[in-house]
Length: 386
Image (cartoon, rainbow, N blue to C red; front, top):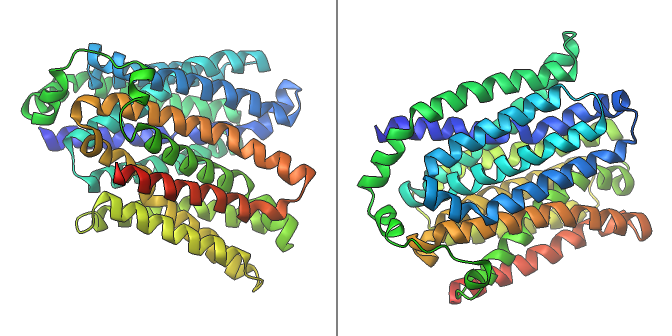
């Protein structure tokens, strides 16, 4: 029963990653069709991020009232409807409208699933589940590409992902009794259910270590998102690498994260979450230094892959260690604010570097990453001391 539920959760994480890469893959066709500037994609992303922040902050309230399984099933259904809405959009304002339910649904899935896995499963599953998220982000662009090359347009790509989400929604609703069975058999979940009070944001911030873990997550996601958005431009502007080659190099950053999380699942059997986080931070530091070395394209590529490999354990291990640090009764609230911090970091910090690159120099890209890495290390060490 538990193994069957775990398989369903793995599918849910693939579902979580599928829509995340759709907009970026489809936008080159969408903005031309909508007759808007290419930069307008940022507005859609901001709306999605705002929705995810709101739903993440309310995840504790929703999960306590409706259960993690029901919240996940309804949220996947909500994202499915939003994806279908995207596929029928004929103007830019319609995409902005459908971005609202998509963001709200995605944030609820993320917070509810992460807390459920942190409470009920070993750290290795958290790493492998986030690896499945990476698989989803890789499949998404292929769905758009299939639609474009076979005459269905970007709309066809969105509808194919919608069909996958509908199937998963049905599976999740059918599996709801399994979620309740696992929760009943698990002591930490019982402890969590004994406390009916929902913590307000002010109360959460007063918990020792809460600010530190939020800052750690903020810095990590700022570093990851900035690398994802700007690594290609840095390689073109500073390293003189052709744009086509740089685009291919940049994709290896995501492959590094995905492969790294698959490997980390085995490493967590021997090492603690904190050890894995520190190891990841060290590998990121090495990767940034390697990127700075003037030894040609291959060395730059190696540095980017190392940054991806270093990023791999940090996100899942921070999430998995939350019940250990703060207790099962507070983990959902803490993971909710962590998700919100993550979305703020990934939403605001890459555009800030864009301004730096525009008005100062793109050569500051590695220095920008180092700043977030150092703050992340200091915040995480402070958390462990508390």
